Length: 111
Length: 108
Image 1: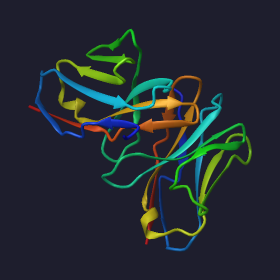
Image 2 (image 1 turned 180 degrees about the horizontal axis):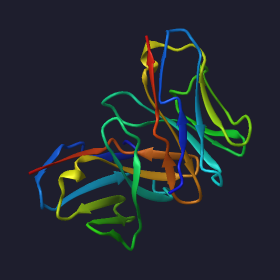
Image 3 (image 1 turned 60 degrees about the vertical axis):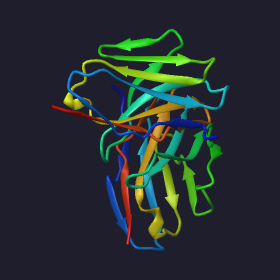
Image 4 (image 1 turned 180 degrees about the vertical axis):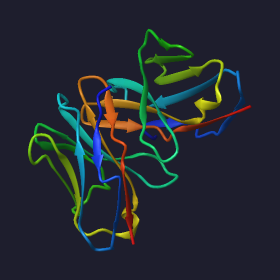
């Protein structure tokens, strides 16, 4: 089965620091997404990306967040100045024309 | 009204029971629907697609009712390993929208 890969699996960072979460989507997919899940809560949509630009973003995805597809394979989520409340699992997903698959997630802990 | 609504449960059932979950959606333009399973601290994993004609995969049956705007998942002969959170999802290309998830606990 095709796989979405995320690195790192766990990142601990100090409040105010920048973090970059990385994702390698499935190679022939065109739609890419970032989600987050705070422990015990629902999976929340952050942003979708298609044709090298953001196609939709949620109210959570403020100016602290950015996404990039720097080299045609990686898809990154950058948080510029992390806050304690950014601590969560961050999931990347990639979608073809029908189904979407999720990576195993990056657990971000902001201390 | 929330885009996707699910009963959060938990549903506590004995092994061998049949259990059904429903999920309602508000966007009539929703393109496609899926059920995902999420184990604790893991990523959502695709369980099955949902079609108006129904979709069956072993003990699992999914159904879409566009007129009433809901999807359902039926699990027959529940196993201990079915214990998880089941998430419905509708998809437009711009967005994947999850329900809150329904927690299922299957006990011996």
